[in-house]
Length: 317
Ligand code: CUA
Image (tube, rainbow, N blue to C red; front, side):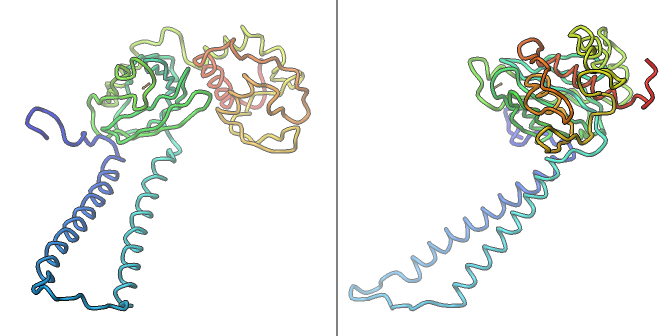
């Protein structure tokens, strides 16, 4: 920590932080070791082998097998250690655990919008509980942004038209800086916020504090009715569109014979470009909803489709 309150290193507040730091310090140590070794040898050799008489000529050297094998194999082993270590940290970061608390994130010039599944919405502030894996499903309304929380050592591009998952497991309650780390226009530097990590009990209190609009899924259910999606996507399989009940996470066969797993990106695409990947046995008759639903509404609809999982197979409606 610097004298003027400038921290040399960000706080360590997630399970990933110490792993990233360990790798970073290993690389730093390695670089220092070789940097000093090489600089030291240059000085030592310059003194030890400098020309003492004007007529001295350097000896001819015709290779040294042991030396050449050595300076090939040793760096190879060192770089392999860096590769395997780095890859293991990368994979841990790229693969969220099975059980996560999901929060939707929409980046926009120039703010961060968060939507909790229970309906709470936040801007530039994200409340999460300590000791639990949190998965952020991120997208952008306009340009590429980048979600960066130094204390958690997480940083990922937030891309329009795509859902990028970022996850972290906070280990310490507190308030942590959130930055946009991709130049995104005039007020890029002002696109900052805070992640507020609460004790589980405090988090429950915060959650119960307010969700005037109901859960994300119920907002989606209403929208589903308002847009008349329900006239074609009927639970009784009599509609002109596929049954959505129990669909999320399943594998479907497309007209082309290809199969794919129904995820957020597929639901999104099917709403915006319905003809792109039509399910086998159906006609490409669905109109596009491009321009009619916002990013937030897309998330509500996706969450509604997801919520249809939990319903029993026998429909009671
Ligand atoms: Cu958003 Cu920079």
